[in-house]
Length: 337
Image (cartoon, rainbow, N blue to C red; front, side, top):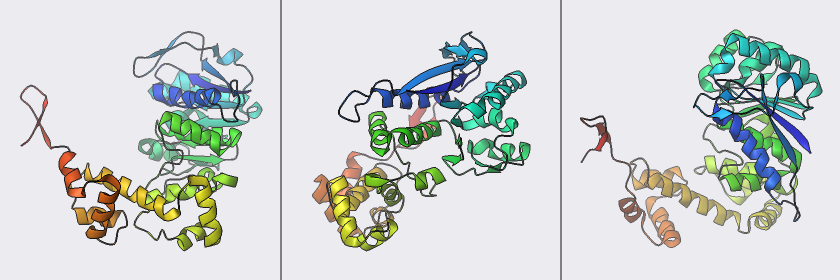
């Protein structure tokens, strides 16, 4: 059993604290090996003292222990929140981290939790990230840190830093993957209905995400890349080259993992994303077709109808884009005609 601690303090961001804990708790509840997997993680909420703490949102948390008597830990996570930037709180947490970090295998911060980790000097010369809104301030206050404002999270040695709020869930999933393997992390992600590898047009992936995929899950990063590059070359030779396999090996292994051919997978993904676009911002059918990689609107329309039994235009009429709103006389948003 691995002990995971999360530091709690007045003014903590509740999701920074709860998000990672729910990931580790879900990993303990899931049956990954056809037998019970309970007891994978022992979770500890650690307060500055034993008094309940009040989150920014007004939620109260009761610590299991306090900094002075915290149990031995495998992993410690420092959440963010305005309270951590209060001098007394910041000093207490930073001093504790400086003393305890040498005995802890993994040290991580979520969002602005980096404000307590950076003063320890443990991150000096390391690549880090934080919430994009605070990245410039972190770089100014701690010039020895190499700040990347675009990454969802980063690993440098045994230190992990993550971007804003929900990025703590991405980070925790990666830590579960390190401990239990990709299948376990994917199972937790599906249970929580979140991405295991979050897609993004700017390829906001940390080095950990780039290199952690092993064995049968060699395609996990690839499918995340496909989701963000649907208009790129997604032919079998091109995709096979990305994972350093021959086209024949790639096709065979892809079918074994996903139960469908690469072409079927890519087309289903293109149509799924196109459906999101149709129900979202107002764009022409032609523009949507091009954005997800179809040669033209006619091909897109035929494939869309074949899969969903309705034309793109009819689908848009049934699921119109949100109407623009204006402020009503009583402060209520009213739909414009």
